Image (cartoon, rainbow, N blue to C red):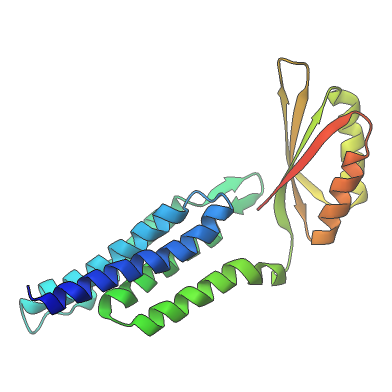
Length: 218
């Protein structure tokens, strides 16, 4: 193996780590099951497979199609993506992460074949889509509200009354009793507007007996 080929392979593998890592960082920041390392590994593996197809098996025969193995990456990534999809009540989570893994696999293949500009442009567009375009999505989004109280019976009625007032739908309610007498109530809801959530949290904090309110945004 000559030095030129070694340099090309090294550069492509490093680019795969950078591109996959950029997308993985965004997923990691939201606590997704497939985060920083997973996206790097998918990108790195896809790049390696593409280079094996091109520089390894592609040199065996002139009739060999380098796209044969690469095509299996796109099919196989579906199994990994499926593992990130979870159903919670009436909601399904993880579709965006599954899609980002599929996109990262494509970016890795582009790096492996030497299409650096395409890989870089795709990475930038994926990151922009994940960070900035979520505010333009229509419809309701799932959130989990956590409330800490000492009187779950009376507070539950008050909390549900507030949620109903703000027009959010309740998917699931979980009550966890702590040894210190406090109760943590977790309520999975659907809410459509960002300002609606701010008002909702403010109102819940005003309820008597509620010591702490937090929300996990999906």
